Image (cartoon, rainbow, N blue to C red; front, side, top):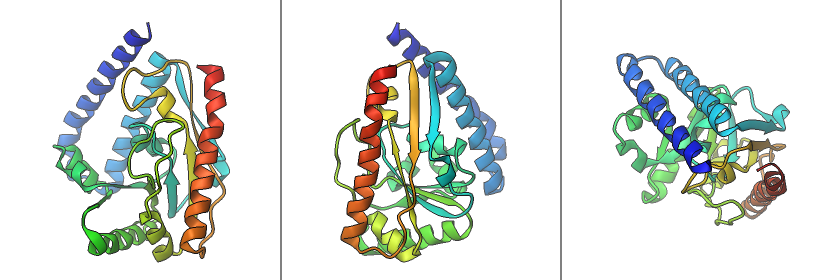
Length: 240
């Protein structure tokens, strides 16, 4: 039964995504804000499919910590759903993403048109400097900059060393960082079927204020995100 539900969801997910790609073509040159609203509708559609087919809801803890204007958000990364669910939660997201994703037909162009921030992970100091400048620009435009400090998806409960790029942005922009823990990988795993029944939970925590040293910041950020994400695991085992 789980396999059938998961397969049905994936079929409808890709059909819904293909439909929006087709609908998007005539609006390719819309202003960025219009394209972001377009993507928000798509993301809400995916949430609807998750709820109706998989009985998976999305819950937000710490809603009072969700920024209204420009901000820097550091998220745990367990699932592909992490890359678009924020469109239904914050007003104007700007994701830091791998430059390689720009090679995906249409999707890559859409990311550029919506002001996402590609980073060349092999570009050295020059790439890091450009990342910091682009990040500061996005925040100054009242966008919520979202970065996955692990750099790639991890399994629930798995620990991956945090990359220091987040500290570079934190130091350059002099902005607080809002840590976000989550449990998305349990319901929408990296591989295999989706798991029906339960809630994908995102935990927005109190901001880490600007001005900490690198060691202090990285230790505190990792401790907050990992503790939050691990704390959600017992909730998962009770409802799945």
